[in-house]
Length: 296
Image 1 (cartoon, rainbow, N blue to C red):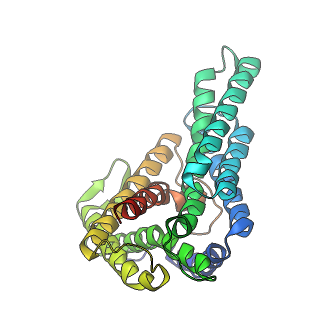
Image 2: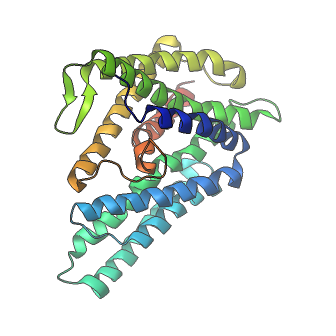
Image 3: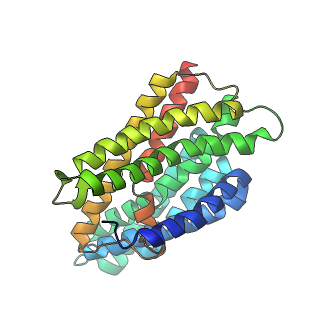
């Protein structure tokens, strides 16, 4: 039987996907500013989860730090160029959190937990979104794009790989698990997930990766062809990463005693509920594509 939240989930997807594609094609600050806002919201939701688990991070500091990470990624454009700045941002936020802990909570206010959870909220809320500018600029930095109008389309297609593998795998897992799932994957963490759904999700992600390769080739003429088999394995890895990301957020929600991380998206929950799988698949896709570039 379909879940009652299926209709609003579909409605949000129908409205949201064209917006996401438009932002990815536009790039620049048109893309970075909404991503930074989402990162701040994600860090705020992580603060809520941490509070529910008995920790007390500095919410404003974590939210500002998460937004700053995305801004730095968009400004520098590549992982090698942005990484020193991102490290500096973590050191700055960590230092300020330590000073705040000593001034406001020491020693009864669990300063170790406050600093650690602040840094975690900052990173967890931003990590998926930080890699979107990196992925979008990858074709230009590796020479995969061609023509004056190519960077927008090429970048959009590169970001589409983890998005498509994640979303197609999630949809396949949902429908296959609802129809045939009996043996639960992790009942103590996420009772609705089944082994059948996991197998279907990973298989669908592999097929989505192959479809991406066949469709994206025209927009990435300079990309070395890794072969259908390699891309299928990469898609399957992204499918596994999506499941791990989903389960990890479920663990955090279980610890906090909440069903959703927030309520920003009707039928989908909060920002983290939409990013949980992408927190693993976007960085993983970046690493896999960099390997393709190096090997090519």
